[in-house]
Amino acid sequence: MKHGLWILGCLFLATLPAFAHGAPSPSSALATAGDAPTSQTRAAVIAARSFLARFNVHDRAAIQFPFVAQKSGTLARFRRSAPDQPALPVTDAQATAPMERGPGMGPPGGFVGERYGTAVWSNYPVSDVPRPGLQMGRLTPAQHTAALHLLQALLSAQGYQKVRDIMGSDQALADSGTPFASGEAVYTLAIFGEPSATAPWMVQFGGHHLGLNIVIDGPHGVMTPTLTGAQPALYQRDGKTVRVLAGENDKAFALLDLLDTAQRGQAILPYAVKDLVQGPGHDGETLVPEGIRGDALTAAQKQALIDIITEWAGIINDAYAAPRMEEIRAGLDQTWFAWSGPTTHAPGRNGSSYYRIQGPRLLIEFSPQGVGDDPTLHVHTVYRDPTDRYGSRFTLP
Image (cartoon, rainbow, N blue to C red; front, side, top):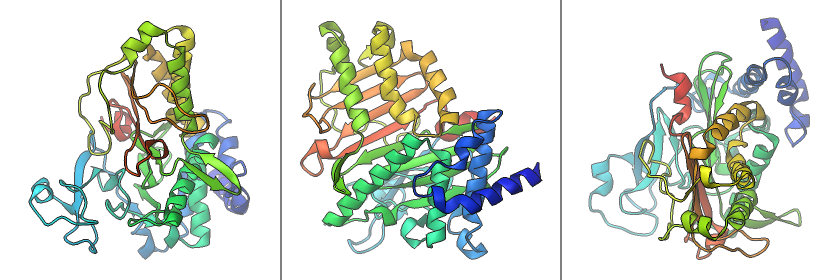
C-alpha cells in the first residue's frame, strides 16, 4: 500500500505543471476507482503532503499548525491601537472599551472573526483579521503551483473556478486602489494537522471575500462553515466580463419566479435584512426559521431550491458533495426559503436582495452589502451546517 501511494505521489509530482493551470487533475481519476470518498481522500493527502514537502522545517512552522477538534467556533475580535498599526487579537472587554476612533481603526467592537482551534475565519480583509498561514504572494513559484493543485484536489471543477473568479474580483478591487489588504497575493493558506487518510486534518484558504474551511476525516470531506463573496461582482478578465456568484443570484430569482402569489406572501419577509445574520463569529446561535417551507413547494420548485443549494454544497469535490446533497435532499421538506428585497434584477447583473435557506442541516445566507454604494456589486454569503461545524460530527466522539 505504501509503495502504491509512493508511485501515485511520483506521478503527481511529474504531472503537476500540466494541471496546475486548469487541466483535469489526477484526483478526478482516483475518485472514480473503488470507494470514491476514500480514493478522493488519498488524492487530497498526496496533494497536501506534496505541497508541504516544498517547505523546509522552519518555513513549514508558518503554514502547518495542530488540528484541534472543537464542538463549534468561537467569536474572535481584533483591534488596532493606531491606524498604522497591525490588527491584534483582543478580549471582548478590550474591544468594547472606549478609544479614539479614526480611519482604519475599525468599527466599534473591533473587527470580528471566528476562531476554531488556531484557525481564524472572517469576512474582513486579512489586514483587519489576520489569518494563520502564508500568503500566496510569499510562496515560491513551485509552492504556489502546488497550493493551487491542493485546491483542485479538494474542490470540484466548478468550485475551483468559483474560487478563481472570486480571487480575480478581489484582484480587480486591489488594482482599483484600496486602503486595506486585497488582491490574490494576500490570500492565505494554512494546513491544520497532518494530512492523513484516516485522522482528521483541515485546510483553510481565503482572503477578504473567500473563507474555505475544509476538514478531511477519512472518507468524509466537510466544507462548513464557508464564506464566499465578491467586490466587485462584475469585472473584466482577458477582455471578457466575469460576473461572480451569478448562479447564486440567478437561480434564487428563478425560484422566486416559480412561486405563486400565496407562496410569495409566505417567502418574502415583511422587513429588510441588510447583512449576514450568522456570519463569522456567530457559530452555535439559534435562528428561528422564516419564509416558506419545503413541504409547501411543488416538485419543480423543490428542484429549483436544490439547484441554489448546489452552488455552495457543490464547491467541494464531487466525492464529498454527493453524500452532502443526499442528506440535504432528505431534509428538503423541512427546509425554509426566505426573501428580503426587490423581486427583480437587471439582466446580466446580480440583484440587491437578501435571501436565506435554512434546513435541519443547512444554513445559507446571500447578503448584498451597502458598502461601496452599489449592493449589486458587493455581496457576502455564508454556508453552515449546524450539525457539522468544522466536521465535528465526525471528528468528535
